[in-house]
Length: 55
Image (cartoon, rainbow, N blue to C red; front, top):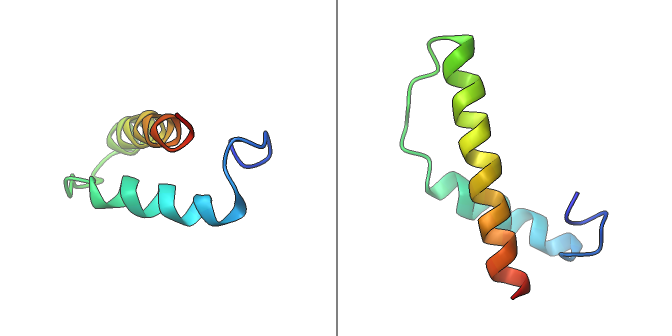
């Protein structure tokens, strides 16, 4: 959404993903609930990264 909305360039996508993944704590995905929780956390983290990139 940030790229399509013009908030970050094409090359910013990889930067956001790498930074978000670098912060992943290795939580084991042993249930659907765990996957949903980690996804929620990653999306929130990505939004914070994008906000810093565009500030």
